[in-house]
Amino acid sequence: MDPKPNFERVRKALTLQQPDRVPLAEVLISDQIKSKFLGREVRDGDMQAQVEFWAKAGYDFIPVVVGMLGPGRVTDAAKIYSIITHSLFEDAERTKGWAAEGKGIITTMEEFEKFPWTSADQLDYSKFDEVQKYLPEDMKIIAVSGKIFTITWILMGFETFCMSFIQNEGLIRNLFEKVGTIQFEAFKKVIGKPNVGAVWIVDDVAYDAGLMVSPKYLRTYLFPWYSRMAKLCKEKRIPFIFHSDGDLWKIMDDIVGIGANAVHPIEPKAMDINEVKKKYGDKLAILGNIDVDKLTRGSKEEVIVEVKKRIKEIGQGGGYCIGSSNSIPEWMNYDNYVTMIQSALKFGNYPIAID
Amino acid sequence: MEMLKNMEDVLQQGSEVAVRENVEKALQAGIPAERILNEGLIAGMSVVGKLFKEGEIYIPEVLIAAKNMHAGMDILKPYLAKAGVKPIGKILLVTVKGDLHDIGKNIVGMLLVGAGFEVLDLGIDVPREKIAEAVREHEPDILGLSALLTSTMIEMEAVIKSLKIVKLKKIPKVLIGGAPVTQKFADDIGADGYAPDGVEATLKAKELLEIS
Image (tube, rainbow over all chains, first blue to last red; front, side, top):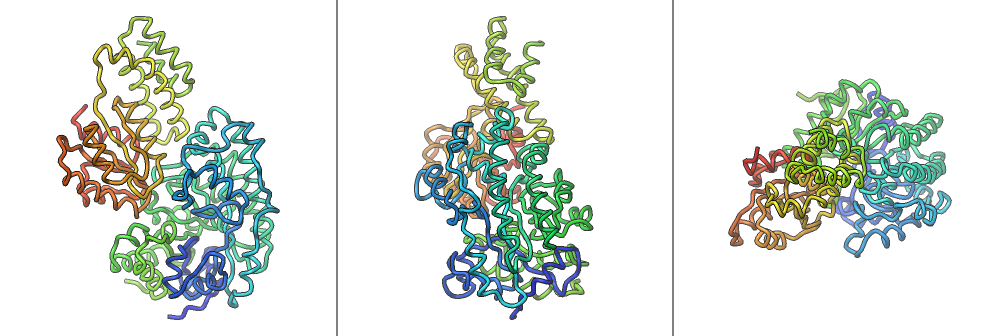
């Protein structure tokens, strides 16, 4: 198989139309997986190798991160990186970038005032320019942004963050305002760049049992930012994808309301994708949902069955991009990942013909 | 008793200071510490757990209530010890090796304390040998294992196997949880129980120890 990238199929799927086949979509794939696929090292900054991977694996876009925090890890690009890693992580082992869930570095107004905030001007946008040199015709960039909720709780420590909604809401207000401003300004800088075909906002606000905080706080402090981003996307006529893990039922109307075109990843343990399609399929495209656990511990046959089922049940009529139920980490079963993308390319042509 | 019934509101909406004051008032009024614990703090946390399970309140409210409860417990501890009141069970909580996440485990721990258990938290990224050693030392009734990733939850099976290899005077029941964990996984690896959230964890823990 030698799939040729064509972002038009992704754009059609994200706008609830039926393209030529169900597009592949992931927001994050480990460089180890990419290296194995290409048979040579793929490093984070090597945009030529990165583009080569995404194109050859069957994707129509390359995701490029903008802002202070990439999905799953702190971006090297942000000057805030060294502050976070030195302040929050006590030893080198922890520089995997998993968040410090208890201890935070901004727990009072004083610490907020003293914190050496970066500005959007200090962030690094060079990847957006560098990647242009290597993009094949018809392949585009999806700008990955968001993380306003996540960065706020990383800076405060998760427990302090949670308790501050009740005990120190002023600090919450200040942090969301500051972090939101930086991320929004960074977002504005890239949205007009050439070949940015869509925006993917990544911000986990839920887990499998529900939302982390009351939806009233999300509506007050978070969604207004994403609504502004979605409005800009609409002006540029580019789709806006919203990602959060977990059970999003209580905020699905909000996701529609902020102007999102699509939702990702519909975590299988948290939400029934068939129910999502039934209730929101006329308003939101859906991405993802192939179980990460199955991709890691399942058999190839199980992966094929799941891919075919999803294409048949969710892909009918368009409005679906297939991919994992979160991302492709380095510990995923490589053969299963390849089976997923190959099965999607084999069975995903429209009209869908799966028994 | 009105004073104890009010504890439920104070836990949720009050402060640690308010909870301490309420507990002290109840003690001064001659209410036995065990009653204050069971009918005040634990009953109050049970309501918190129910509201959390039903999606009426969220993690911030649970954390506040749990911290408030701990403040009340700190006042009661010497009185409970003097009266010979013991926790209903001992639970050792651990995030398995390779996994650095603990907020879920911490919330479960708070709710378990709220239900009357003694909870020992071994922390995060704990190798199976250290878990076995802690089980031998503390002899918990239940070992609670937590993991957030598919790659790390696999370690849970290794932990269960290692408990069978080492010589233990008392083998705990094993209760597992975490985002990628399912009942099927728990069955496959021979865990005694699985809980999808903190409230279910308290119910399952009581069920495993046959406590009503």
